[in-house]
Image 1: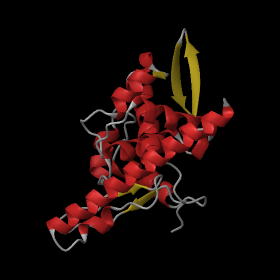
Image 2: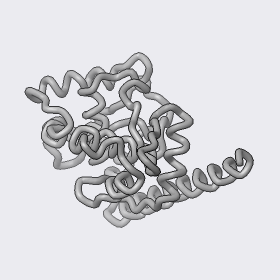
Image 3: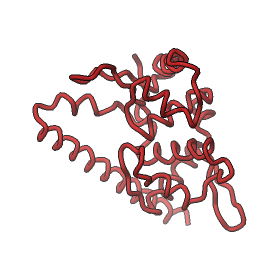
Length: 212
């Protein structure tokens, strides 16, 4: 199965997923303001991983997303608002957009969990309908956007994960030899993600100095 190289950073994926979610759940507030976007990104409930993004981190990621064509900004009065171009950018239908947004917001899911958690974004008639879109996303000629993870010990079903931020690391974590080793691995992953965000912010600030 061919999969694309990393398309988005975790911060960029969170921003896009929140824009998709709010477009479908609170359309009166969409396009989203920076404040609304920050609140959605840092929401603790049903967010995996949990994030604490500052305004500057979000603005840096928004600049990158806009340059790459993932979002559009709008000026409403003196307030900037943001909308996504996720479906058109990837060339996937609205049902697949809902599936990917749910995976980006909640982390790996079984098909049953995904159907339940997708309901606010798109209501699938049954599991087989959802699995049809998962299969299309996994078998895209342009590169897979989702992957079925190896079943974890004791689990009844395998979970699906998105590939927009590169290969999922969960499979490595579950084969750790002990809970302590698993915790150390997750801590290293979190530290690396923080370093990536810091480097992206520094690069964006450096670039803006020359563009000013």
